Image (tube, rainbow, N blue to C red; front, side, top):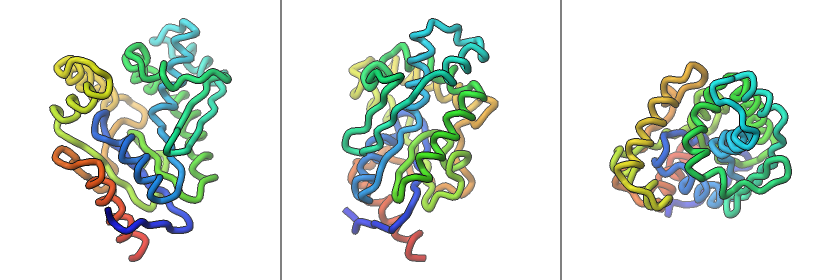
Length: 226
């Protein structure tokens, strides 16, 4: 592992599609930095769970926005044990289920929902001395002034294999679902999934988690020492 970097303040933005290793890498990196961790995708999942619980039509942006604005999110940013509460109810398990997974891209595409959550994300980032933030628009929208911006990617097969191993699902079905989400996330009108112009792309296909974290620490070393 590369030498640990613990600057007094730093923001690391980690973007990329599902299955690229963002969550595990970001949590490990935040731990190495003695910092905190924010999973912005889980924030959208938490709101999606609230929308589904309310029985709202996903194709009705006004109704979706109303639920989002009424939802109280409590976000735990400890990289070892991140957690989410929706109106006081723990949703760590439910937000990873197939129902939320199938609906989250539709909810995340609603501009008013994104505006609300981006504001909250920036508030959390501003209050943390060292933070690793993962998502799909962190470097391009949420934290464009981040000290290090990386875009993690991997082959479609590798991403599907990783995600199916996590969720105990069929690899072919998982790959098809990832392709569906990629298309929705990349084509939405507001804050689409894309690599920021100044983000460093890291292909994790043939890399282990420790290798990726070490590489990112090296990149951060270079940034803070230059």
